[in-house]
Image 1 (cartoon, rainbow, N blue to C red):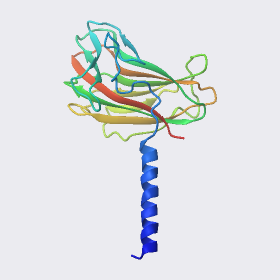
Image 2: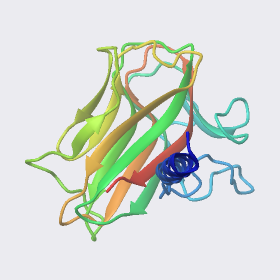
Image 3: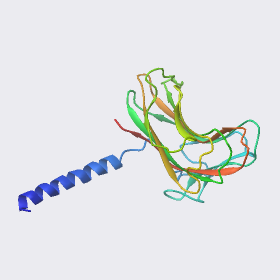
Image 4: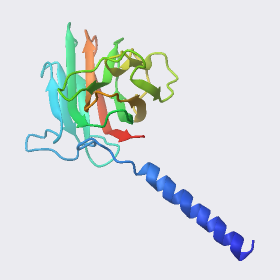
Length: 219
């Protein structure tokens, strides 16, 4: 290879490196996405924490396991109970209208059981008055990661997008990454995200960890 060809090849490699760095360096719009910042009560800054029953459903920041950093969000069903149980974190994020965003999370199950359905993440589109926007056509979701299990699926309900589990083994004892691509509309001002466990009539006890949540503008 002559000097000119070598310079061209090196230049092209440099361009590829810069482009790859740009893609991988997309800005996460969430505050405290890995739960590394906590207050004196061990509550994660930037998030609201909610449990429907402190005895039956647990929600806490733990350093038992983590994908990055030292913390993750631990949810647990402590006692089977008739009715609805929730252990979740909530955050409202200002976004732009008519834009495409990628929303994702990593989670890990421990002794997961039951038939569900369990909801692990809920994504809603809000207007400037913080009211939920109901889509008609087209719907919110454009694309999502491939899931080879009929018991685990992304669902576009027109007024929200959810990740539901009806007893899948995916994520048991290991971290998995799931993501969805959504589009805001002309009335959008916020994305409202809920991460954790939401279930009706759980029939067993188990734990679940969440980490590295993200919302990134795609275009």
